[in-house]
Length: 217
Picture 1 (tube, rainbow, N blue to C red):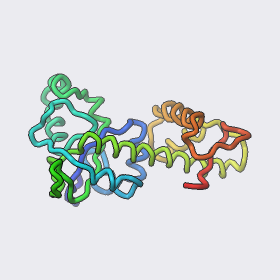
Picture 2: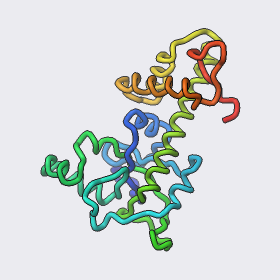
Picture 3: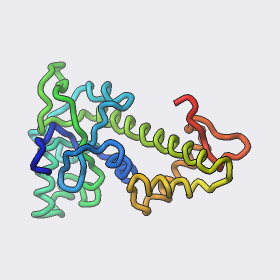
Picture 4: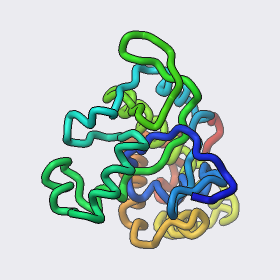
């Protein structure tokens, strides 16, 4: 962590690997934990509601298996355990070194809600509840694909109506957001699935391959 900053209360949330570059680029702040910027999502639509849901406490480190999130202190403990015996951590907690890389540091508000309905300070022992973690993952997922849609609309305007393969747009998106090229195919597949299923806002009827717009975002 940078010495000039005090670490805020955080949780570590499991996030799809190809979204990490965009999150760091768009929402990462000045505070770093090792190589990762602490990400601020509280302004995203739905984030405040998710963060106001009931939390849990990781201080007793039970259950052993890690779900979709973990507290700051549990992450520190697992990082230390990985250095000593990665095999033990994988057996006991269900986390390989690669799986650990999916977790990103998310800045939390100052207060959290306990299962008993009591407000208390959000410390490094506090973890998201199961439903809360899923809700926050949805918030991030929706924001990511909205960003891809916005980027696609801008890319289409830049192309001035000319045809372009969607993979060209995705490659440009990855380059702009410092997302490794290895994720281009995964993003392209999901993006095309969303186009076909109608999850994207608008698809130009004469050429679905070309682009979508964001008139009502």
